[in-house]
Image 1 (spheres, rainbow over the protein chains, first blue to last red):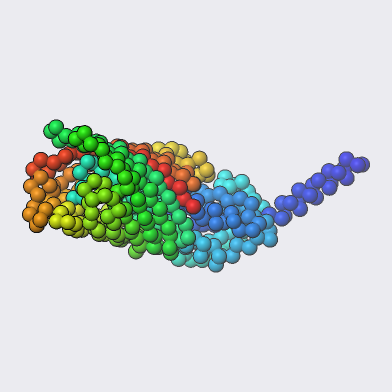
Image 2: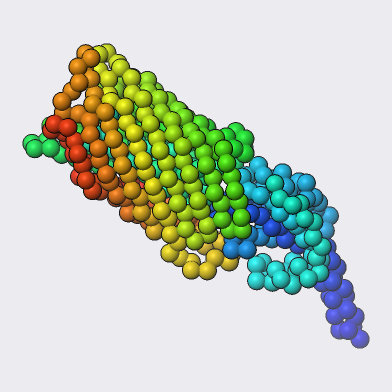
Length: 119
Length: 275
Protein backbone atom coordinates (compact mmCIF):
# COMPACT_ATOMS: atom_id res chain seq x y z
CA UNK A 1 0.00 0.00 0.00
CA UNK A 2 2.84 2.33 0.89
CA UNK A 3 4.52 1.53 -2.43
CA UNK A 4 1.38 2.41 -4.37
CA UNK A 5 1.06 5.67 -2.46
CA UNK A 6 4.70 6.51 -3.11
CA UNK A 7 4.33 5.70 -6.81
CA UNK A 8 1.23 7.84 -6.97
CA UNK A 9 3.07 10.70 -5.34
CA UNK A 10 5.97 10.32 -7.75
CA UNK A 11 3.66 10.30 -10.77
CA UNK A 12 1.87 13.35 -9.46
CA UNK A 13 5.22 15.10 -9.12
CA UNK A 14 6.27 14.15 -12.65
CA UNK A 15 2.96 15.36 -14.11
CA UNK A 16 3.26 18.59 -12.13
CA UNK A 17 6.79 19.12 -13.38
CA UNK A 18 5.74 18.44 -16.98
CA UNK A 19 2.84 20.85 -16.65
CA UNK A 20 5.21 23.53 -15.38
CA UNK A 21 7.20 23.64 -18.59
CA UNK A 22 6.34 24.83 -22.05
CA UNK A 23 8.15 24.74 -25.36
CA UNK A 24 8.21 27.62 -27.80
CA UNK A 25 8.96 26.65 -31.38
CA UNK A 26 10.01 29.81 -33.16
CA UNK A 27 10.32 29.98 -36.95
CA UNK A 28 13.10 32.29 -38.11
CA UNK A 29 14.31 33.14 -41.61
CA UNK A 30 17.95 33.91 -42.37
CA UNK A 31 19.86 31.64 -39.99
CA UNK A 32 22.57 29.70 -41.81
CA UNK A 33 25.22 28.59 -39.32
CA UNK A 34 25.88 28.12 -35.59
CA UNK A 35 27.89 31.35 -35.34
CA UNK A 36 24.92 33.29 -36.80
CA UNK A 37 22.32 32.16 -34.34
CA UNK A 38 24.51 32.14 -31.23
CA UNK A 39 23.81 35.68 -30.10
CA UNK A 40 20.06 35.13 -30.42
CA UNK A 41 20.27 31.88 -28.47
CA UNK A 42 22.20 33.60 -25.70
CA UNK A 43 19.68 36.45 -25.54
CA UNK A 44 16.86 33.92 -25.20
CA UNK A 45 18.74 31.92 -22.58
CA UNK A 46 19.07 35.03 -20.40
CA UNK A 47 15.29 35.39 -20.09
CA UNK A 48 14.04 34.44 -16.65
CA UNK A 49 12.50 30.98 -16.68
CA UNK A 50 14.15 29.78 -19.88
CA UNK A 51 15.71 26.37 -19.32
CA UNK A 52 17.28 25.55 -22.69
CA UNK A 53 17.54 26.82 -26.27
CA UNK A 54 18.29 24.75 -29.37
CA UNK A 55 18.22 25.56 -33.07
CA UNK A 56 17.56 23.57 -36.22
CA UNK A 57 19.09 25.46 -39.13
CA UNK A 58 17.60 23.33 -41.90
CA UNK A 59 14.04 24.08 -40.84
CA UNK A 60 14.83 27.55 -39.49
CA UNK A 61 13.39 26.78 -36.07
CA UNK A 62 14.53 27.71 -32.59
CA UNK A 63 13.28 25.58 -29.69
CA UNK A 64 12.97 27.23 -26.30
CA UNK A 65 12.11 25.15 -23.24
CA UNK A 66 10.90 27.37 -20.42
CA UNK A 67 8.93 27.52 -17.22
CA UNK A 68 5.23 28.01 -17.82
CA UNK A 69 5.55 31.39 -16.16
CA UNK A 70 8.11 32.64 -18.70
CA UNK A 71 6.58 35.07 -21.15
CA UNK A 72 7.86 35.17 -24.72
CA UNK A 73 5.43 37.31 -26.64
CA UNK A 74 5.54 37.42 -30.42
CA UNK A 75 6.29 41.16 -30.27
CA UNK A 76 9.29 40.48 -28.03
CA UNK A 77 10.53 37.67 -30.26
CA UNK A 78 10.06 39.69 -33.44
CA UNK A 79 12.13 42.54 -32.01
CA UNK A 80 14.81 40.24 -30.62
CA UNK A 81 15.42 38.48 -33.93
CA UNK A 82 15.14 41.69 -35.94
CA UNK A 83 17.89 43.21 -33.81
CA UNK A 84 20.13 40.24 -34.61
CA UNK A 85 19.54 40.49 -38.36
CA UNK A 86 16.97 37.73 -38.84
CA UNK A 87 13.30 37.61 -39.78
CA UNK A 88 10.81 36.33 -37.24
CA UNK A 89 7.95 34.39 -38.83
CA UNK A 90 5.90 32.64 -36.17
CA UNK A 91 5.86 30.97 -32.77
CA UNK A 92 4.06 27.90 -31.52
CA UNK A 93 3.68 27.05 -27.86
CA UNK A 94 3.33 23.44 -26.74
CA UNK A 95 2.55 22.09 -23.31
CA UNK A 96 5.81 20.18 -22.86
CA UNK A 97 9.40 20.28 -24.00
CA UNK A 98 10.01 17.73 -26.70
CA UNK A 99 13.68 16.99 -27.27
CA UNK A 100 14.54 19.40 -30.03
CA UNK A 101 14.72 19.16 -32.92
CA UNK A 102 13.74 15.53 -33.49
CA UNK A 103 10.38 15.73 -31.67
CA UNK A 104 9.46 19.14 -32.90
CA UNK A 105 6.68 17.75 -35.06
CA UNK A 106 4.93 16.30 -32.01
CA UNK A 107 5.10 19.59 -30.22
CA UNK A 108 3.49 21.44 -33.07
CA UNK A 109 0.47 19.12 -33.04
CA UNK A 110 -0.69 20.42 -29.71
CA UNK A 111 0.62 23.92 -30.00
CA UNK A 112 -0.91 27.16 -31.12
CA UNK A 113 0.66 29.46 -33.65
CA UNK A 114 1.02 33.20 -33.92
CA UNK A 115 1.88 34.28 -37.42
CA UNK A 116 3.60 37.60 -37.56
CA UNK A 117 3.72 37.70 -41.33
CA UNK A 118 7.42 38.46 -41.39
CA UNK A 119 9.40 41.65 -41.19
CA UNK B 1 49.84 50.55 -53.35
CA UNK B 2 50.46 50.89 -49.65
CA UNK B 3 53.92 49.88 -48.58
CA UNK B 4 52.83 47.00 -46.43
CA UNK B 5 51.10 45.30 -49.32
CA UNK B 6 54.35 44.81 -51.17
CA UNK B 7 55.69 41.91 -49.12
CA UNK B 8 52.56 39.96 -49.87
CA UNK B 9 49.98 41.15 -47.40
CA UNK B 10 47.19 41.72 -49.86
CA UNK B 11 45.07 39.19 -48.08
CA UNK B 12 45.74 40.49 -44.62
CA UNK B 13 45.09 44.02 -45.66
CA UNK B 14 41.42 43.31 -45.93
CA UNK B 15 40.90 40.25 -43.83
CA UNK B 16 40.21 42.62 -40.98
CA UNK B 17 36.83 43.37 -42.45
CA UNK B 18 35.58 39.86 -42.07
CA UNK B 19 32.59 40.20 -39.87
CA UNK B 20 30.56 38.45 -37.35
CA UNK B 21 28.20 35.89 -38.55
CA UNK B 22 27.86 32.82 -40.66
CA UNK B 23 30.61 31.00 -42.46
CA UNK B 24 32.92 33.87 -43.20
CA UNK B 25 35.68 34.65 -45.67
CA UNK B 26 39.29 34.23 -44.61
CA UNK B 27 40.86 37.13 -46.48
CA UNK B 28 37.95 39.25 -47.63
CA UNK B 29 34.72 40.81 -46.43
CA UNK B 30 31.18 39.71 -45.60
CA UNK B 31 27.85 41.52 -45.52
CA UNK B 32 26.53 39.50 -42.61
CA UNK B 33 25.71 41.65 -39.58
CA UNK B 34 27.25 41.73 -36.12
CA UNK B 35 23.94 42.03 -34.29
CA UNK B 36 22.62 44.95 -32.31
CA UNK B 37 24.61 45.32 -29.10
CA UNK B 38 26.86 42.36 -29.89
CA UNK B 39 30.61 42.37 -30.32
CA UNK B 40 33.07 40.25 -32.25
CA UNK B 41 36.80 40.03 -31.75
CA UNK B 42 39.11 38.51 -34.29
CA UNK B 43 42.77 37.72 -33.82
CA UNK B 44 44.62 36.93 -37.03
CA UNK B 45 48.15 35.68 -37.59
CA UNK B 46 49.75 36.25 -40.98
CA UNK B 47 53.05 34.89 -42.27
CA UNK B 48 54.03 36.27 -45.64
CA UNK B 49 57.02 35.65 -47.84
CA UNK B 50 57.85 37.71 -50.88
CA UNK B 51 60.86 38.21 -53.04
CA UNK B 52 62.66 39.70 -55.98
CA UNK B 53 66.09 38.93 -57.46
CA UNK B 54 68.44 39.27 -54.49
CA UNK B 55 65.70 40.27 -52.08
CA UNK B 56 63.85 38.09 -49.57
CA UNK B 57 61.10 39.69 -47.49
CA UNK B 58 59.46 37.88 -44.59
CA UNK B 59 56.60 39.41 -42.66
CA UNK B 60 54.91 38.22 -39.50
CA UNK B 61 51.79 40.06 -38.47
CA UNK B 62 49.21 39.79 -35.73
CA UNK B 63 46.06 41.77 -36.30
CA UNK B 64 43.38 42.37 -33.71
CA UNK B 65 40.00 43.45 -35.03
CA UNK B 66 37.01 44.41 -32.93
CA UNK B 67 33.50 44.85 -34.29
CA UNK B 68 30.40 46.17 -32.57
CA UNK B 69 26.80 46.20 -33.74
CA UNK B 70 25.53 49.75 -33.20
CA UNK B 71 22.15 48.96 -34.71
CA UNK B 72 20.75 45.82 -36.37
CA UNK B 73 22.21 47.06 -39.68
CA UNK B 74 25.19 49.23 -38.74
CA UNK B 75 28.45 47.86 -37.38
CA UNK B 76 31.69 49.67 -36.62
CA UNK B 77 35.14 48.10 -36.58
CA UNK B 78 38.64 48.93 -35.44
CA UNK B 79 41.72 47.01 -36.46
CA UNK B 80 45.26 47.27 -35.12
CA UNK B 81 48.18 45.28 -36.57
CA UNK B 82 51.48 44.44 -34.93
CA UNK B 83 54.10 43.37 -37.39
CA UNK B 84 57.70 42.34 -37.87
CA UNK B 85 59.38 42.41 -41.24
CA UNK B 86 62.78 41.16 -42.30
CA UNK B 87 64.32 42.36 -45.52
CA UNK B 88 67.86 42.83 -46.79
CA UNK B 89 69.40 41.87 -43.44
CA UNK B 90 67.40 44.33 -41.37
CA UNK B 91 64.30 43.91 -39.25
CA UNK B 92 61.59 46.41 -38.44
CA UNK B 93 58.79 45.77 -36.00
CA UNK B 94 56.03 47.55 -34.16
CA UNK B 95 52.49 48.70 -34.57
CA UNK B 96 51.33 49.13 -38.17
CA UNK B 97 48.74 51.42 -39.71
CA UNK B 98 45.36 50.96 -38.03
CA UNK B 99 41.94 51.05 -39.60
CA UNK B 100 38.51 52.18 -38.44
CA UNK B 101 35.48 51.66 -40.58
CA UNK B 102 31.74 51.13 -40.69
CA UNK B 103 29.51 48.75 -42.62
CA UNK B 104 25.81 49.27 -43.22
CA UNK B 105 23.49 46.50 -44.33
CA UNK B 106 21.50 48.17 -47.09
CA UNK B 107 19.47 45.21 -48.32
CA UNK B 108 18.40 42.00 -46.63
CA UNK B 109 16.39 39.05 -47.96
CA UNK B 110 15.91 36.13 -45.58
CA UNK B 111 14.40 32.70 -46.21
CA UNK B 112 14.37 29.35 -44.43
CA UNK B 113 18.04 28.48 -43.97
CA UNK B 114 19.22 31.13 -46.41
CA UNK B 115 20.00 34.82 -46.58
CA UNK B 116 21.12 37.53 -49.00
CA UNK B 117 22.71 40.75 -47.78
CA UNK B 118 24.18 43.78 -49.52
CA UNK B 119 26.31 46.13 -47.47
CA UNK B 120 28.35 49.19 -48.41
CA UNK B 121 31.29 50.05 -46.18
CA UNK B 122 33.72 52.90 -45.73
CA UNK B 123 36.66 53.67 -43.51
CA UNK B 124 40.03 55.22 -43.00
CA UNK B 125 43.52 53.89 -42.44
CA UNK B 126 45.38 55.91 -39.86
CA UNK B 127 49.17 56.40 -39.85
CA UNK B 128 49.78 54.70 -36.51
CA UNK B 129 52.83 52.87 -37.83
CA UNK B 130 56.32 54.33 -38.15
CA UNK B 131 56.58 56.05 -41.50
CA UNK B 132 58.76 54.14 -43.94
CA UNK B 133 59.00 51.12 -41.64
CA UNK B 134 55.72 49.76 -40.37
CA UNK B 135 53.46 52.39 -41.94
CA UNK B 136 53.33 54.76 -44.88
CA UNK B 137 52.67 57.97 -42.96
CA UNK B 138 49.48 58.97 -44.73
CA UNK B 139 45.85 58.98 -43.72
CA UNK B 140 44.06 56.99 -46.40
CA UNK B 141 40.43 56.21 -47.16
CA UNK B 142 38.58 53.26 -48.58
CA UNK B 143 35.06 52.25 -49.46
CA UNK B 144 33.15 49.63 -51.33
CA UNK B 145 30.26 47.23 -51.33
CA UNK B 146 29.96 43.56 -50.39
CA UNK B 147 27.31 41.02 -51.34
CA UNK B 148 26.73 37.87 -49.30
CA UNK B 149 24.53 34.93 -50.23
CA UNK B 150 24.45 32.09 -47.70
CA UNK B 151 22.58 28.87 -47.06
CA UNK B 152 23.11 26.22 -44.41
CA UNK B 153 25.24 24.36 -46.98
CA UNK B 154 27.33 27.10 -48.58
CA UNK B 155 28.15 30.78 -48.55
CA UNK B 156 29.35 33.26 -51.15
CA UNK B 157 30.83 36.70 -50.40
CA UNK B 158 31.86 39.10 -53.16
CA UNK B 159 33.14 42.59 -52.79
CA UNK B 160 34.49 45.60 -54.65
CA UNK B 161 36.74 47.95 -52.71
CA UNK B 162 38.57 51.12 -53.69
CA UNK B 163 41.41 52.60 -51.64
CA UNK B 164 42.34 56.25 -52.00
CA UNK B 165 45.93 56.57 -50.84
CA UNK B 166 47.14 60.03 -49.99
CA UNK B 167 50.47 61.78 -49.93
CA UNK B 168 52.78 61.97 -46.93
CA UNK B 169 56.10 63.83 -47.05
CA UNK B 170 56.31 63.78 -50.82
CA UNK B 171 55.41 60.08 -51.19
CA UNK B 172 52.04 58.87 -52.37
CA UNK B 173 51.09 55.24 -52.88
CA UNK B 174 48.83 54.59 -55.87
CA UNK B 175 45.14 54.03 -55.42
CA UNK B 176 44.03 50.40 -55.25
CA UNK B 177 40.98 48.63 -56.67
CA UNK B 178 40.12 45.17 -55.34
CA UNK B 179 37.59 42.61 -56.56
CA UNK B 180 37.35 39.57 -54.30
CA UNK B 181 35.14 36.52 -53.95
CA UNK B 182 34.99 33.86 -51.24
CA UNK B 183 33.11 30.57 -51.50
CA UNK B 184 32.54 28.39 -48.43
CA UNK B 185 31.14 24.86 -48.63
CA UNK B 186 30.15 22.83 -45.59
CA UNK B 187 32.05 19.53 -45.40
CA UNK B 188 30.67 18.31 -42.07
CA UNK B 189 28.25 17.52 -40.71
CA UNK B 190 26.40 16.48 -43.86
CA UNK B 191 23.08 16.86 -42.03
CA UNK B 192 22.68 19.87 -39.79
CA UNK B 193 19.97 19.19 -37.19
CA UNK B 194 21.27 20.35 -33.83
CA UNK B 195 24.22 22.66 -34.31
CA UNK B 196 26.13 22.17 -31.08
CA UNK B 197 29.11 20.42 -32.68
CA UNK B 198 29.88 23.20 -35.14
CA UNK B 199 30.39 23.18 -38.89
CA UNK B 200 33.52 22.51 -40.94
CA UNK B 201 33.78 24.45 -44.19
CA UNK B 202 36.12 24.28 -47.17
CA UNK B 203 36.93 27.77 -48.36
CA UNK B 204 38.16 29.01 -51.74
CA UNK B 205 38.83 32.69 -52.36
CA UNK B 206 39.84 34.60 -55.47
CA UNK B 207 41.36 38.05 -55.38
CA UNK B 208 42.13 40.55 -58.13
CA UNK B 209 44.00 43.68 -57.09
CA UNK B 210 44.96 46.56 -59.33
CA UNK B 211 47.23 49.31 -58.02
CA UNK B 212 48.03 52.59 -59.72
CA UNK B 213 51.64 53.74 -59.80
CA UNK B 214 53.04 55.39 -56.71
CA UNK B 215 54.52 58.88 -56.86
CA UNK B 216 57.50 60.53 -55.21
CA UNK B 217 57.61 64.29 -55.43
CA UNK B 218 54.86 64.18 -58.02
CA UNK B 219 56.81 61.81 -60.30
CA UNK B 220 55.53 58.29 -60.99
CA UNK B 221 57.70 55.51 -59.62
CA UNK B 222 58.58 53.12 -62.43
CA UNK B 223 58.75 50.02 -60.27
CA UNK B 224 55.26 50.30 -58.86
CA UNK B 225 51.68 49.58 -59.78
CA UNK B 226 50.12 46.70 -61.64
CA UNK B 227 47.63 43.89 -61.30
CA UNK B 228 47.78 40.73 -59.22
CA UNK B 229 45.54 37.69 -59.12
CA UNK B 230 45.64 35.35 -56.14
CA UNK B 231 43.81 32.30 -54.86
CA UNK B 232 43.30 31.32 -51.20
CA UNK B 233 42.22 27.77 -50.38
CA UNK B 234 41.49 27.09 -46.73
CA UNK B 235 39.44 25.46 -44.00
CA UNK B 236 37.11 26.96 -41.44
CA UNK B 237 35.40 25.59 -38.36
CA UNK B 238 32.46 27.53 -36.94
CA UNK B 239 30.69 26.78 -33.67
CA UNK B 240 28.23 28.89 -31.78
CA UNK B 241 30.93 30.86 -29.98
CA UNK B 242 34.16 30.43 -31.91
CA UNK B 243 35.29 30.39 -35.49
CA UNK B 244 38.74 29.20 -36.59
CA UNK B 245 40.14 29.48 -40.08
CA UNK B 246 43.37 28.70 -41.87
CA UNK B 247 44.27 29.51 -45.46
CA UNK B 248 47.21 30.01 -47.80
CA UNK B 249 47.13 32.77 -50.38
CA UNK B 250 49.06 31.95 -53.51
CA UNK B 251 49.75 34.22 -56.48
CA UNK B 252 48.16 33.07 -59.72
CA UNK B 253 49.13 35.77 -62.19
CA UNK B 254 50.78 39.15 -62.08
CA UNK B 255 51.26 42.03 -64.47
CA UNK B 256 53.48 44.48 -62.63
CA UNK B 257 55.28 47.57 -63.84
CA UNK B 258 59.06 47.47 -63.62
CA UNK B 259 60.77 45.28 -61.03
CA UNK B 260 58.89 44.74 -57.80
CA UNK B 261 58.91 42.47 -54.80
CA UNK B 262 56.44 39.72 -55.63
CA UNK B 263 54.50 37.68 -53.07
CA UNK B 264 55.35 33.98 -52.89
CA UNK B 265 52.81 32.84 -50.32
CA UNK B 266 50.83 34.21 -47.40
CA UNK B 267 49.60 31.95 -44.59
CA UNK B 268 46.57 33.27 -42.71
CA UNK B 269 45.08 31.85 -39.54
CA UNK B 270 42.52 33.43 -37.27
CA UNK B 271 40.07 32.94 -34.47
CA UNK B 272 36.83 34.89 -33.99
CA UNK B 273 34.85 35.10 -30.80
CA UNK B 274 31.39 36.58 -30.53
CA UNK B 275 30.01 38.21 -27.40
